[in-house]
Image (cartoon, rainbow, N blue to C red):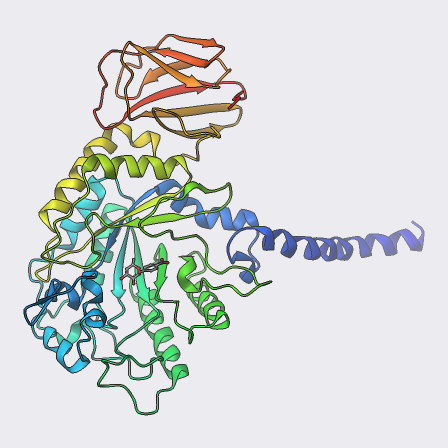
Length: 466
Ligand code: JFZ
């Protein structure tokens, strides 16, 4: 062998590493989210996001001192959300503290809450470890402003972690960056009569990180850190970036929502792993490769509010879940347990209805991706699964046709087989491709008054002209 080629042979691996080293970070930067900050490849990101994309449905729980207030203070009703009562009624910290000896949720049963979520078809739970009032729902070593100062000498997060592990549900924490109570938090709140005369925001951030370290090291591996309260001017992009890295550093596989910092300066990559539209479903989702989750209340409050009885119907909630899945997102649906530790009966009933529907139709929700149709179908929605060359479409029919025929506009591909998901025997439904699309012969009566699912299997690529 001549010396030059042996030189080349030794150089080649170095060259490869150099080229890859240049190419990988660039490709990773293009992936949505902040994965690239930890030199994550798109494949690694996909692996980390896998459970979230398959789950599609989770339970949000807003629970804290405000639940005990139940939307009322000294005979006054709050007009806003229950968990904002301290801000909205300008309750001084020293007064709000009277809730501490009252908070004794002896009826709390972690197994029951987790079973309720599981039977609804939910795959994860996000609970408030701390909301904006700064009060910790777990015994922290860093402050007395937490559950250890209440008569309730238990750790609900620990009990939930155990119940979730048993049931195979992924536990996640909502943790507020904004903290109305901490003496070093800035800007100081007008009602905080316990603020430090010389507040030091860095000291607050060190405390926040300390809390997160407790949460990330005590309660087993978590699914998501769901940040919130990132909108105040003290919470800069660099602080958000630093916090994102800190959390991923403690649990590399954890998913972090975009509320770790949303006001991204021009030219900087966005932070967090997924988008969090609140109380709304984006008209067309966010396109392929962008993960998101709509969080929503069942009435008009997150934290328990006795007066709020404005409940959404099971029909709306089930169709929301389908609508969201058809656009490639997750549904994080909220309950606000009482100060006694009970989930309101109206919420329980709705979750049970959703569970009834999911037991029949869950296959058409879990692990699906967005609809391949450009335009929304006139009678409902579509979700999709692909496996090699095979595609399965699930048509969610909200408005069942009269006259025994359903038309899928624009679809020119003949399916291998079509059947009703509720039909255990999978009797084939007759189909015909025509000018207008694919027509399917269906029974006269809708299998489900809220949404019936038709399954269609294809063994060739889809031709859709709409
Ligand atoms: C926040 C909280 O303030 C609220 O109490 C609740 O926890 C909710 C889930 O999140 O509220 C927000 C957050 C973001 C927006 C609006 C309300 N937003 O982006 O429009």
